[in-house]
Length: 88
Image (cartoon, rainbow, N blue to C red; front, side, top):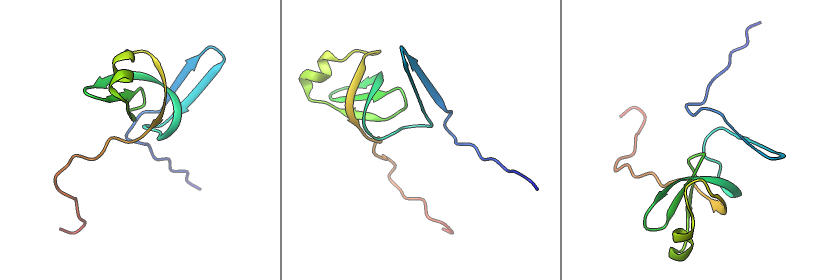
């Protein structure tokens, strides 16, 4: 009997804070508290797992890198101009 394992192209991430352990494998959408790893003006912040959160201007100005942010996180929209098609 053989056991074959696959890997995700994104590394697993484990986050530790006082009395809290959270693990993921890439961007996790949905309402959650995440560490802010980046900001893209005018209104987008990037979570430490690669998910994005859109904020109003006043809130965007208040959030700093390294802050924990409660938000309804989403995936970043695909910006490619073409769609890959099988057999074509």
